[in-house]
Length: 98
Image (cartoon, rainbow, N blue to C red; front, side):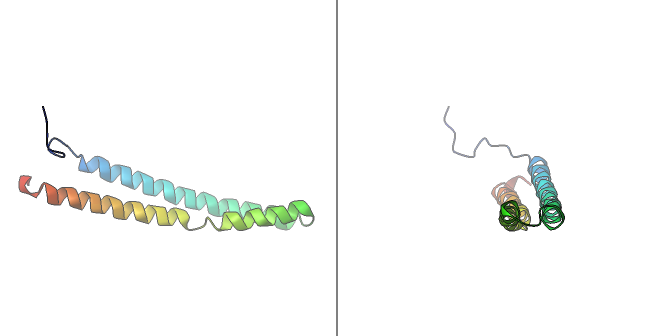
């Protein structure tokens, strides 16, 4: 039996909302872990490995890790916007039901 695309789709709004919020929570957690990691790397560089090739390499690595700061927050915001747009689109598409 052939169906028009979307004709037999059931969307669980609550599940979409919960999944999106879980993703955002994981992004927040990742951001916090990155900040803690940067603190630990900085401490090792400043107090443990103060000079030499290892210190220089650690410094470069620390710069790369620093570039990750804020990325998880951006991902969380993008997820929020996608989730809201998706749910709004579904609500508009099925407005005749409610």
